[in-house]
Amino acid sequence: MRIGVMGAGAVGAYFGAKLAAAGHDLAFIARGEHLGAMTQQGLRIISPSGNLHIRSAVFSADPTDAGIVDMILFGVKSYDTETAAQALGPMIGDHTMILSLQNGVDNPAKIARQWGERRTLAGVVYIAGQISTPGVMLHSAGGQIIFGQLDGGANETTNSVAQTLVGADIASELSREIQKVQWTKLLWNAPFCAISCLIRANMKQIVESEKLINLALDCMIEVQAAALSCGIKLSDELLDQAVAFSKGLGEFKPSMLQDLEARKPLEYEALNGIVVKLLGQAGQPAPINQSFHAMLRYLDETIREEASR
Image 1 (cartoon, rainbow, N blue to C red):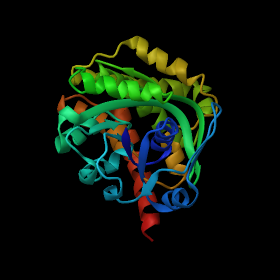
Image 2 (cartoon, rainbow, N blue to C red):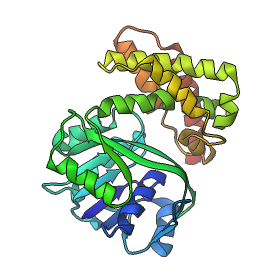
Image 3 (cartoon, helix red, strand yellow):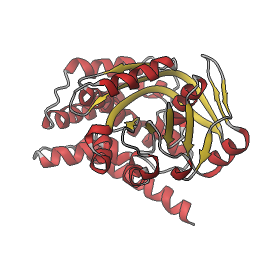
């Protein structure tokens, strides 16, 4: 199978490398120093489950160099979704599938508006890792993809995607309730990404504070209400599970804190802004997420101003 990776950050690099190692024909679309390093030295994955070094793949900033592919792993940051989706044209054929592996709940819908629901799949990723240096992805734990069609259906194509992932030793699950899975992940991302950024704390530091855990739970209650406004019911038990999961993460740094430390733009709109927006449309307040959103926006604007100097 010919596979394109749009956005070869930690997520795209890891899963793309696994697919390349399984014998698939890969094209990684990336930019900056990371692209330069991959072009010269290939892509390296450092992982407790086995290191990988991918050299025989296309590494480019131009989707035209990838050509038409059978499947696209779409892993750009949420704020780049629409721009990156518009750039996919040279990679799209009659049967190309696009699998979003992004944070948030509304990115697949944005892709679908550009390329249609028929070829768009929503995915939720559970992985701990980061680009440690250009061309090198450091994988520490996890590596699962849960995915499905936006309408909850399944067909030969989705089954083929599942088989492809499993064949590359990627833990995967085809879900008929993928939107609920997306919201369940947002239940964790919205509070813990924000808190970690705002106080520069890893998960161990956060979960050791009763006040911070209570703040996270208040944020989750707003996420729960926003999901319900979209017809998705998240049980109270899921809130408890999110906290319990957090207590097992040790000194893990959420992706948004990694971005802040690397002076990269932040995904606050996809994680907190969406909650404020949906609850506002439903006539409900979202004071915790509104506060998180405002403070993260300030941090993000500071980062962007520094980058433009």
